[in-house]
Length: 426
Image 1: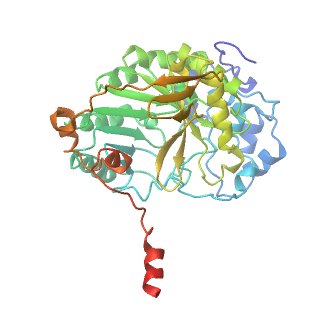
Image 2 (image 1 turned 180 degrees about the vertical axis):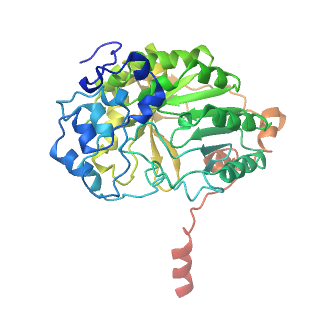
Image 3 (image 1 turned 135 degrees about the vertical axis):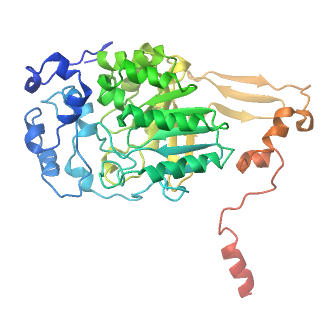
């Protein structure tokens, strides 16, 4: 079924639940489903699903809100929503390159729950709990485990670290899901961050509007409004997740001035189709959510069956760029294994270059030459106020440093070691 604005539905099990209770996020959380018996009352479970749910105790946590499981076609084993939240025996299969902490977040964590990878921003993990658990979760080593919680002491260390590092201008609240926290605790954290002068932007990454849209109340939206500039990224993977309830939750947030972006993960059997992706971005734009990233699935344990070739992502971007509004085309990226950060990938639109011309092609294959300027006056960093300010910011090196002449070369750790050994041996 494809079409604008899917309406929510209730599984037959919930037909007698009063509307007031159904729309109460507390009731939804209290009645999450996590066992063969519970889920089997709603879905016709396949043998791989039943085997996983009855399997070992090391299965990544299963908890699904009644609202979200009701969106699944109970008779369709290939339902795209079902695949995201119902475990199968494929999760126990290993694959080449598999890692527990594929993004090396623990290595880049100066204090508990804080990841500092990029010079001017940090990711602050506030909780390990979510409303519902995605089967491809990058942080499955932590998320969902009630024993892996962050204490008051951890929060204090996080805040202190941000205070002591003035280059940090952007703080991303993540987890788990920050919007699962009690409003008072979330507001305390936002208030504390807003007292730090060099913190300019606060971002929240959440899937609550997808899994538990009734949690986005007027009270929550009004509280968030007090801490602008505040941005939010949702995580929608398929058009079927965009319901009336989702749209209403987004409307409450945008009406208080919170810009909303979306991060999609490319998942085999869920959204590995340019037509699905095009429908997704169109539906997102209709509710004022801008597509931001399309991520290649991480090399995380339990997610091997979700992985697609990287070429699939390139194919999808090829089918979006020029074929729909540029406003809706996300950045296709790999979060580089080992802590390399987000690496954007795209089809090659630059074909060749000479001293005078740049040869480019468009989405249709039309090839043209762009004449380079012959009278460009070089920018003078010595007279640029912004360049002089930039020099005061630590950690801004890398390839940009090479281009600006601040470094002569970059050598990966250990690059010269084999050569030196050979030289010494002779």
